[in-house]
Image 1 (cartoon, rainbow, N blue to C red):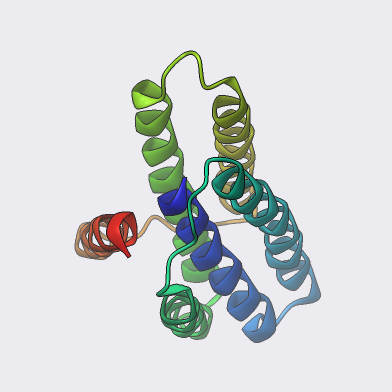
Image 2: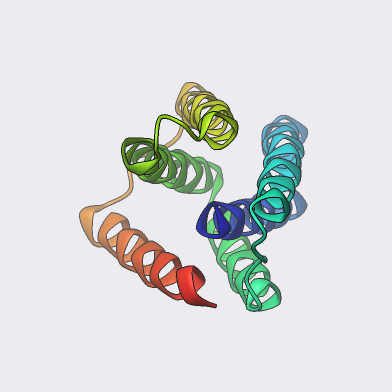
Amino acid sequence: MRVNHVGEVCAQALYDAQALAAKSPELRQIFSRAALEETDHLAWTHQRISELGGRTSVLNPLWYSGAFAIGLVAARLGDRVSLGFMAETERQVEQHLQEHLERLPESDAASRVIVEQMKADEAHHAQAATDSGASTLPFPARWAMRFAAKLMTKTAHYL
């Protein structure tokens, strides 16, 4: 659950930055709405971590700062690229959450409910970005995002 929490910290930072740097009010609203929903995810994962007797990542300030910087860069590349970054991020998160669901014990109903709702919300964010004109990111960008996410998840698992 700590890995999911870190993902939500990063999503919050990405969308905060993208909303801040968006040129159009419509785009700002899309990112702000997604950031608000990610706040719910942060609260749910934080509560579940506490219930399980765990702790959040000690690197959360680093995760937030790095993701915020990436969000600013994505926003500066233009609306379609920024939306494309959102869509690709959410597709990758949705895939991660599906893999997490497959590993979660059926008996852990509380965690499963949280992960399932997060997965549904992430799919909605990806679709909203696509419907708003997201461009498809080139393969090297998608690969780099996947690599960075793997690095983050492996590190967050322990720290």
